[in-house]
Image (cartoon, rainbow, N blue to C red; front, side):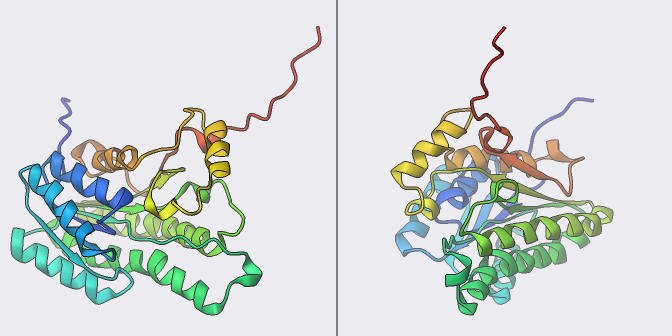
Length: 263
């Protein structure tokens, strides 16, 4: 069998599209041949910038402000993509925010507010994508999780809980989607240089990561975007319910400087 790597279809939706991994993913999918619709919550110039980047690839875009924690936002985005291009073939749930706060300092509003976007928003996206993709018998649903699933970090209890919940959602929906020709996978970035991490990644944190990561550097959004393009392609046709870790080897590195034998 000859394998040709091409997108499963020509229309992609990406949430959190204006910066970081979302922006890199939207551009990478456009370069691979997709028209891209997306939502963002940053300043308008960020949405305009990603639209211009997509236009430079020769493909169309529909980039609008929107809250991924609101189910109506997903429905409106899907309707706009259908009206503009006639299908939705790839759906990337990416919108998220980071909260670094000890458990005992976290309020009820902190907890529920973080989960509203970082977990509930992914449920709304998966459900909306399934409503469109199941009848057409094709599609890729891709959820952005995090390497904190594997390497727990103190003071990230709400963020880590959301990411772990997304893994469970991914696996369950993958089973339900399989009879309809739709695959559902997650991608777990490691330490990535994004605006989301700009404050949390102090010089000391960066130095520790650079020492711990076998590839000796933090990742960049394009490292994750290129892996997402693979999952969105026909080359991933037999992969579903999987969480792909893309972290430069961070979570497998147990090296602590063991002493050698004396003889």
